[in-house]
Image 1 (tube, one colour):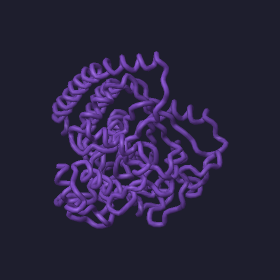
Image 2 (cartoon, helix red, strand yellow; image 1 turned 60 degrees about the vertical axis):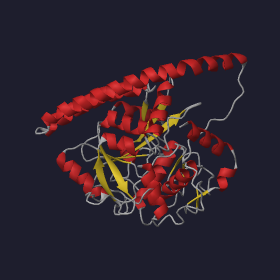
Image 3 (cartoon, helix red, strand yellow; image 1 turned 120 degrees about the horizontal axis):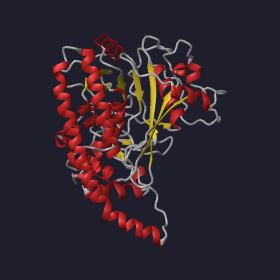
Image 4 (cartoon, one colour; image 1 turned 90 degrees about the horizontal axis):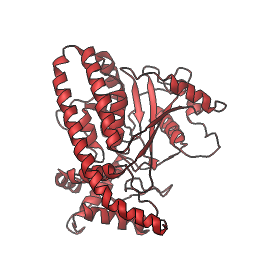
Length: 407
């Protein structure tokens, strides 16, 4: 684990990484120079002698606090699993079972978030239309409605913390997207947590039933299963940009009035350690990152939701609203309409304007290529003995071997 940390630090602190390639594809975005797959490293800053002494104290105290909080997180997680298992006796009564599950998740997951340092999470409803001040957003925030069954929550993805927060707030149905089939399947909370930072599965396993997105959302609505969460990037980033969406919305119209769409953007602020989780190939990565998160005394997460009347599911929504420039006239996050996925192009632009993140040309296949390169490099495998993937649209024995090593 420490070797991995050293690799990241050395790799990220030099300029040579910008010329590195994974699978024949550059592993940074050529248009912006942003590397969304490496853990962010804060800039070094000069400190006074007093600050250095305080840092030394933290070096001693943080591991102790991290260990204690990690134990408490484990205990709360076990209690959550136990209570959810006991709640299965209510399965014949779906409404009662959902209320029970919602209550248990809201309480215990919030406790876990507090132990991870997220004492206060600001959730703000925002408007992107010109001429509407923050007062409108605050009024909407105070009267915010609960997400309902059949509602589609579209969110960026940077960490397992995202999954914990969404589970705490909405008790939703989590999904996994497959970019090669453009279909989704339902996954449990635990599976969603494990997928964060993991090697992305581009196609579904044999025998696993998947559905087109809108068919899946409508099926969940009929079952009364709750809102549906989708991460259209298909993999985690370091929360500095937005990957190109998987064209999962390609069969949808603009506006898409058949379902309610909520656009949620999560953003982390940090000074030294980022709660983002880009690489979690095995349990050592996950445990190490979780320990460091617990060792933090305070972490910050801000959440923004787009006002419902500006959602692309509103009957009054115009595609031009979604592709308009920002209020400052800057081009941050603004993209051109995408013919194969018009709704996805609108959503990614709205999300970019909400977060002020740039939209990249990299996608989930580039993340898989990067992880192939990382696995080979981190395990010291010579390129002469093993060929890295040369096309991001083809599956090779190298990728298969990388997956087998991961498992």
